[in-house]
Length: 68
Image (cartoon, rainbow, N blue to C red; front, side):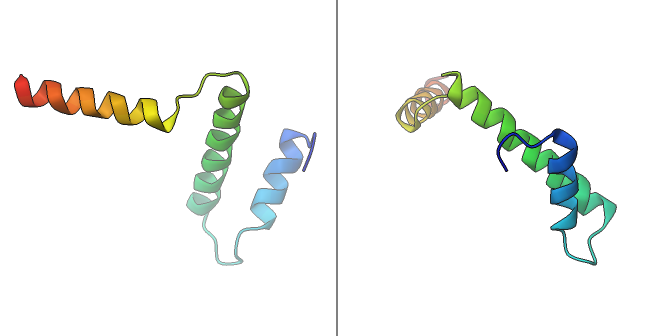
């Protein structure tokens, strides 16, 4: 939904929930969608980390715990 308003995105997300969805289900879905939007924005702005870098960071962390 390109250039949809926040309200329109919220309405669409709620309408796509199953009929037996709870308020908690709706909140979880909206939080998830918000986090996806934030992540996509960060990626567009070059604020993301490659898989290789994440793996390297995890290796360094693991090594420091083993030696520390």
